[in-house]
Length: 573
Image (cartoon, rainbow, N blue to C red; front, top):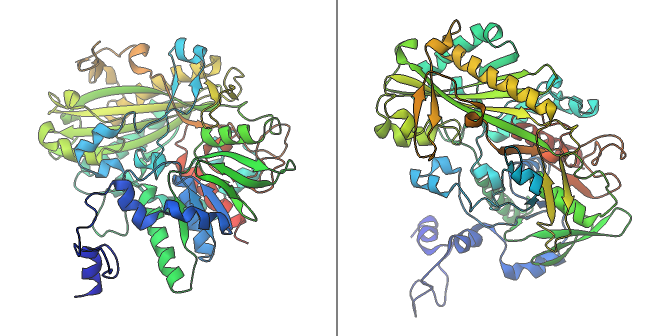
């Protein structure tokens, strides 16, 4: 019997002795997903004592995109780097949920989404009753559910960022390396039989007409989405999640360690880090975790926990020492518009086609917006339902079955348009609230101010204009287009010629939160220095959108991962 054959059936690389394989008594009769994944990839509870006694070069908290980008880049530099990864959640999905059977769409709500904060009464009850998009506390984090749009902001879009940080993004290969990590490809290059002729015509319409038809727009191009999977021949659309990359790294390091050519990558799941214990002079000496204390020794601690959790951790750990934490709280507000135009606006479309495009611009006050436009042409919506679910460029902004039925002779456009929240609004903040649980004892407050409202009006108009351009109706788009309006029950809706009102298109969610630990030279005017360390803290480094001085409107993950790779470069010594 070959070793691979034995490994497959016995669950290990050798046939074990003793109570195993049904002799002399039956073996265990059940296993959870955590147990199965844990045996293959994660440290066992019994290993914690050894972990506490071991020395590491890096302790990375979090397994989302920035954590894995940092780990991968560090191991490229040095496979002998000793890395410990702490993840608060357990194993849930092996890939992005869009790559799984359609039934998994039912698992997109809460749980797994959690909200480790309290909104203020003002945030929760006035104006649009805003809420902050939650977190997904599992291995891979939000990367298992994200929309995967990955534009690269140009220097002029990095408003009020330190020049030194802008210069980092201008380094040769900065964006290409981040795109490679996230498997980013543009929608015009997918060409899988679903993305094809419609995509090409959308690109032509946009390229030739957006400057004239959308006065506030600055650029437009085919949507850059993290859907490439170059290791699989022939797979054209495979939405990226960090889970596979992380577990591949863990297995690769395990093999290198067995050959004496590298160090194991140790991953501890179900481990919440509550506080960073320090000596009072800026050096973290230990981590207070749900599994027990962990000495830091000479390790560098990398916070790769998203945007708000690292702010919470630093607030609880360095009370008063970092006075600017949470004084900036930015992100993106959103409008959502669905429209349709007759198929005859396009030429030679197949029975099913999908396309995606990206347009960005600015209001007169300098604040930014961008339009994420998806297009769906389905002559058989019920028969195409599974394909659309798997290949929709943005699963959170996809044409519904109610919209597609009756639209067999139409192209349906679904536009999610994001605008940046101004960093100058002092009514937006994150603060400790005196709660006893250090992972949730913060309050959030965010509401749009006058500058944001001005931008919101501009982005709504730009969205309608963009739909007209995509439909090839730049002269009088209103005469050709119909708009979807949800009925009061939320379970259906109808098409109409008139544009829907603001209340029907403006959402009350804040996404892509940013800025509570913004970077800058001076401790008096920022939280984190240009070396990614909080001012006055010696061995802790921050990744993610918390670092952004301003959020812009562009989707942040590509930039976050590029900066995490830059951090790995700086710490390679």
